[in-house]
Amino acid sequence: MNLEIKNIYVETDSKEILKDFSLSIHEGEIHAIMGPNGVGKSTLSKVLMGYPDYIIKSGDILVDNNSIKSLEINERSKLGIFLVYQNPISIDGVTTSEVIKASLDSMGKRKGLYEYVLELEKNTDTLNFDKSMLHRGFNVGFSGGERKKNEILQILMLKPKFIILDELDSGLDVDSLKIVCEALNNYLEENKDTSVLIITHYTRILDYIKPGFVHMMKDGKISLSGDFELSKKIEKHGYNQSFIVEGN
Amino acid sequence: MNKIKVEKDNFSLELENTDYIIEIEKECKIKIIENKDITSNISFLIKNSKVDISLEIRENSNIVINSLGFDSSVNFDIFADRNSNLKIVDSIITKIDSINNITINQKGDYSSVLVYSNGINLGSNKLYFKMDGIIEKTRFGVYLDENSKIINCMDGDSKIIPNLIIDTKEVVANHSAYLGTFQDSDLYYLMSRGINLNDAKNLLIKSYLLSNMTLNLEEFIKEISLYRNGGIE
Image (cartoon, rainbow over all chains, first blue to last red; front, side):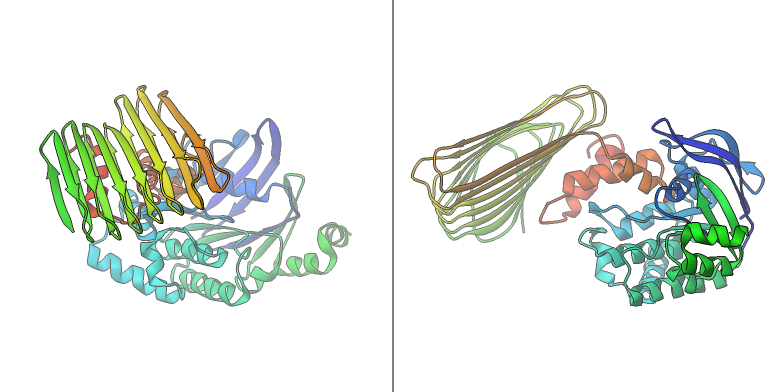
């Protein structure tokens, strides 16, 4: 999937968050957006997903040269856009298995029950995810790490073409982060046309999922772009200093 | 598991140490009695009816009630004796007026009652939960916890009316109430998995109605699905 964000201005609660933001991500590319709190990183993920609270005042978002600005959240999901949430919700009374099945049905990817169960169990094994959790309330009583594994399980089942990872490493211990990133890397290896946008404060996750492109956000837009080495400079110098070092 | 379909206007049941599913599709009065030391799960499936249910829980008994009502009004009148435990989950989904009362009289020391009432109001009709918790003077070590929530899907007249009538200091009693709509964050999450708005609401309706129920009854799940697809079987 090719995604092009063209000069968007985005408002929420009458406050402008993204200002003249542009970014192109081509098929199979991995991009990382870094920046301190409050610069609009998570807003970007919600805007791409189509949250109605975030209003695009001008500019456009194109997927394979078609505008998705007027598409609802579920329609964007059907195109293959998948957001891994920083804080996934929990739903008592509805199981993880039910949510995944409802998603597959809605996307027209309905499977036979036997095939579905086998695939679900294979993917839970890959993630070292307790199978009993599939039949408990969705994320009810799950730890932060288990919730993130549940998000990745949905990727393995729904097979999206554009993955947004919003602070994937938050709530994950080192071992869980390693398992989750290995599963994602295997998925990307098998689905080379899938693009990824990593949104993160820290460089830790970038050691596991290595981006070809790194961008720094400041004041609602990208202030600096580079390759993987930029993330190392940010780690060393901090956000403001790395900007000055690179600018010079 | 005993399955009972109520066909009389007045129905009595003496509880034994087993579980029950009681189906009701007509206006009726139900009286449930037991001796003592009984452990039982009672599940009510109530359709298009106005039902009065009285229950006397005797000493040392542990009773769980899961009640799911469609377009119905249900009154529970409960007495809890010494050292008894009751958990009651009373869920109602309705598109017609539904007035529901839960009266709990904790007559015995060390009795413990936990109440959840979950309502989905689909239309412009009334959906009321009135809950009275009565704990008399001289009672000791009594626990009462009432939790109510109603989701308004349109502009319904929904009310939660809690009364805790407590005449002793040796008690722990709580009440919580939520009246509102579905959380946008929950709907958006499900939609971000490709699920359309209506199906996302159906999943959340099921979640609300079945939350806190001890048993995940296939009958209940099937009936919720049938009801949302345009009618009750």
